[in-house]
Image (cartoon, rainbow, N blue to C red; front, top):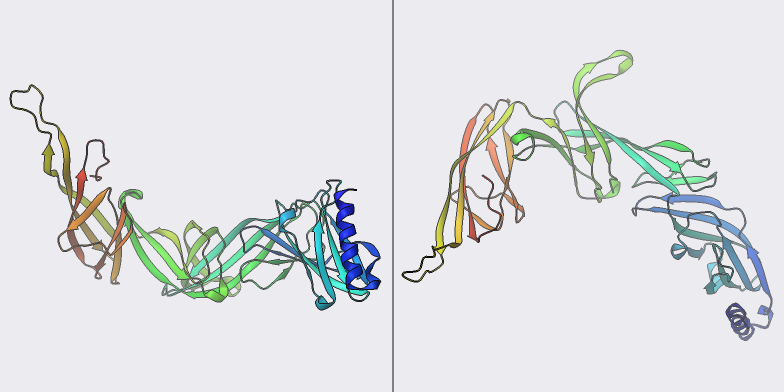
Amino acid sequence: MTMRHLLLAGLLLLGALAAPSMAKVKLVLLPQRENVRINFNAGQSLMEEERVVALEQGLNEVEMAWEGLPIVAQSILFTPVDGADMLTTLAVSTPPSGQNALIWWVRADEAGNYRLRISYAIRGGVNIERIDYAARADLDETTVDLTGRARIHNGSGMDQDDLTVEIGATPPIHAPLERDERKDLLILDHVTYPLTKKYLSDRNVENGRVQLIYEWTVPVEAGPQLPGKARAFLATGEEMGEGGKLDTFLGESRLPYVPRGEESKTLVGFANNIEVERTLLESRDLDVKFTKVPEGSENRPERVLWNTMRKWEIELKNHTEDDVVVRLAEYAVGQWHLEGDVQPSEVESNSLFYIDVPVMAGEEKTITYTIVQENVEPGDPVLPG
């Protein structure tokens, strides 16, 4: 007797013990699907569909086959929607033929039409090919107007005639797709967030040239923000033909994935009216320790442990009419500390820290800081200089 026959015999026995009318097994092939949805929030394509299935009283063998479709079998979930209290899923099995299919053994208390919801992940099915954002800052640069479009591609191998797409917190979009069709969907329609403007000078980016960064928080009710290309614009207040407004293009960057409630930022360009210049004032080793050499030996003492220091002077010039805070990205290595009044505003990692420097409108300011790397041994990486 095969394993499937044993399973069937066991289920029949279970059904017989439960009620005398459950000895008959009906094979049910799932009918045409309806209410198909796809959700992109989990980092993969998650499909959800509903089908109305006619079940007999007693034990039913419900089979779902997907030959040629990229469904991940382990991800399939089967949930009754209507009359859930009348249905009991006794077991799930795969056919012995090895075909792409699953069989649910479902006991129905009464015969009737039942709505079933089936969800599953798909590989390379309907997917997002790209997301493009337009971030438009208002004239005062206190708010940002965000518009987003997603291009989706139907690579599932079949027409998606009744497809509903869910991306982030966007309301469901009805988007039927033919096989291999591409379609652009509006996923953010002029959503306005409070905007913070920040300035960053990183010695490893354009030799420390000051970057202008727009930053906003993705609200809990509006997230997550999916990764995509962002173009930033600044309103000029000038009107153009047919009621349009003239904007200044600031730059283009890549927006990362941002969970709801967390900060999003985009590099919009460089602030040419704010200057930062770094000068290395002093570089030397401290507290050097040597190997001990016996008196009369021809060997020379070798350095085995020391500290090394770098003293930096940073000159900042603010040619704007606004007070600003310039964030300096500085680099370290190994075990280190800063000496003097200037201390890190934030330490991101053992090798990267930030110093925030307020600079008033029209002001020129100079700060110095000394960084000491401790317990350096031969072959260790040392501070940049």
